[in-house]
Image (spheres, helix red, strand yellow):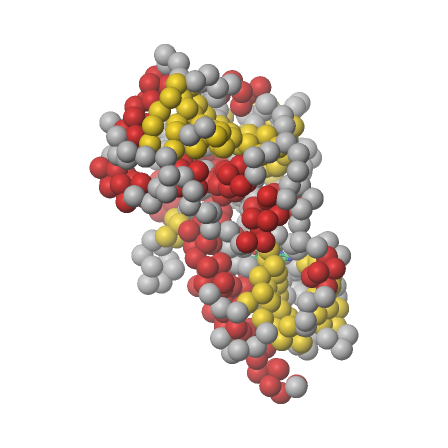
Amino acid sequence: MVLDAEIKAQLTQYLQLLENDVLFKVSAGEDDTSKKMVEFLNEIKEMSSKLSIEHTELPRKPSFSINRPGEDTGIVFAGIPLGHEFTSFVLALLQVSGRPPKIDEKLAEQIKGLSGQYHFETYVSLSCHNCPDVVQALNIMSVLNPGISHTMIDGAVFKEEVEQKDVLAVPAVYLNGESFSNGRQTLEDILAKLGSGPDASELSNKKPYDVLVVGGGPAGASAAIYAARKGIRTGIVAERFGGQVNDTLSIENFISVKRTEGPKLAVNLEEHVKDYNVDVIKSLSAKRLEKKDLIELELENGAVLKSKTVILATGARWRNVGVPGEEEFKNKGVAYCPHCDGPLFEGKHVAVIGGGNSGVEAAIDLAGICKHVTVLEFLEDLKADSVLQERLYSLPNVTVIKNAQTSKITGTDKVNGISYIDRATGEEHHIELQGVFVQIGLVPNTDWLDDKIERNRFGEIIVDERGATSLPGVFAAGDCTNSPYKQIIISMGSGATAALGAFDYLIRNQ
Ligand SMILES: Cc1cc2nc3c(=O)[nH]c(=O)nc-3n(C[C@H](O)[C@H](O)[C@H](O)COP(=O)(O)OP(=O)(O)OC[C@H]3O[C@@H](n4cnc5c(N)ncnc54)[C@H](O)[C@@H]3O)c2cc1C
């Protein structure tokens, strides 16, 4: 039995939603994974009379495609879509059967309007929580446009391919055999990359907003909802809806929700915002802000939006270590997300730079997958909580090197080592290894703002108790501000404060 009772129970409900017959075309060999995949599909087939199986030859074994009888959709899963990809499999099944994907009508039209042949391949790991978004987006594109096909490839099953292509970060997407993208992407991102993004002049012609929020993380979502609930014209521009919560798995301190997962919370944030009359502009970033009669916000595609007030909620991003080799070997052994990319370093030696909570958590996580983990901490002591340190020191395959300043990451076509300077002696040491996870905190996404908005020496926007910045009419909230603590619930609170502050400002300055 591949499916446990709980999954079977869930699946039974979903399979009732199948609209029409679906045919699995299966390409299997004699290996254990092939046998397990066939067993997996047979178990599912037995659960609905609408499902059938046919054997065929596909470029990869084991793999299977999901089709309408007499019509191939181009959706292929190479490997067994369990773990985080199980949802991708179920959604593909429902969509192939005729249930329309839950996307905006405009996006569906954009996809259908793409001409040409696009064969996408996505390398994933089943423990990667960013991968399903990409797999699901590309599957939707395959369902809607006959010129598009997509294969999800489990890197753990197709190890040779992964090594040959030097895939060291997932999701890694290839289009017609060429590298297309790395990391999480939304449907909008993919369409924008294919040259089918929103039109700049259409955006510039939008009526001015009362409140325009920049950023779609917890702070931005909260600000948009609070503003919209006042019945004023509200817009939100978000490069990546959900923000940092997309990068974490388990969230246990979002009060009143005992436990949730980051990507799930990100979806909930977007759905909650869309429940209100908010004009949502996704997958575009702001690059300039200027105060004239109204406040103008220029986007990366040249569009200029106008608003009476603006709330900056652009959050923060991973801090780079800034040593030679980091940029060169990004996605080629230099990684930032242990949950996503850890499995690609199975049985290998990796380093974690940073001994704070995130670094030590990453090291503990990686120690379960990798042969050896070396933690490099700049200071004389680790800064992580003592319970984490105890757990770390109890692991047999972890070495902690303190007082170590990383000096370079070395490699040829991918990482082969790391050098550090022992700060006590000044001596440089080199360790041969295959991966480096950088975990040294975050920097605020505020470098695109000019000096008219006061920021502290860390680049954080300085706000008062109402979320107001030094530029009248511009407010800020969340991790991009000088708030001393950076947490989801705190960002949401400050987003609400900034929206109420902006509303107050509008009343007094109409
Ligand atoms: C690995 C990890 C685990 C975490 N775990 C927890 C936890 O368990 N509990 C907890 O409370 N907190 C946790 N946090 C912290 C929490 O995620 C942040 O405090 C919170 O997400 C901050 O929200 P925010 O809206 O201010 O910013 P962000 O979440 O960073 O969102 C910023 C938004 O702005 C957008 N943006 C940025 N620049 C631009 C631009 N120029 N134009 C347009 N849009 C832009 C981004 O795309 C994004 O939509 C964790 C963080 C990380 C990285």
